[in-house]
Image (cartoon, rainbow, N blue to C red; front, side):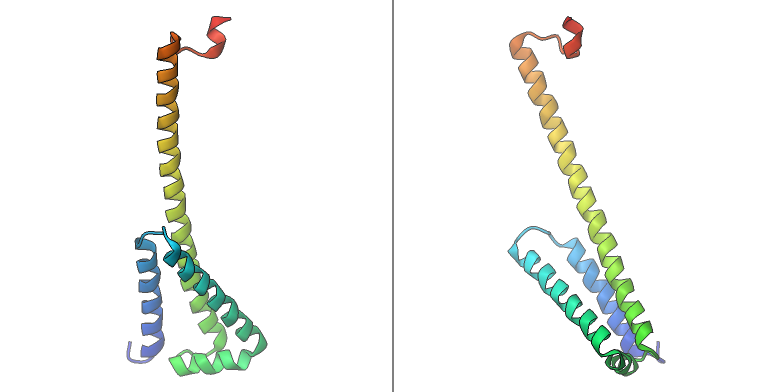
Amino acid sequence: MLDQPLIKVILLVGIVGVTVLLTRSTAGARHQAIRRLLLVGFVLLAAMAILFPPLLTQVARAVGVGRGADLLLYGLTITFLGYVAASYRRMRQLEQQNTVLARQLALNHAVHDARHGHDGGSPDASQ
């Protein structure tokens, strides 16, 4: 770790940052604001990398990476990791919501059937 300490620290901090953001609650205006600020920052950095490629190489060398393309790859790796983890978390939340809704719907149907004297069979069974 002594040959490129700054980039390794930056990458580890990035991974820890993604982990912290994903383990916190996603509800609230503060979380939305952080996500929007990160998106704006990402867009600005991408534009700077496109408009001024030598600047990316200078930043890469300053943090201990040989080329700007390598630094870009490292950054995209952290970003992709965050995206995959956030997508997984969101999918789990949706699955939990679907489970709760399905249970509530089943209970509502059972109560409705009990009140109206249905036997709980399929709607086509009475024909």
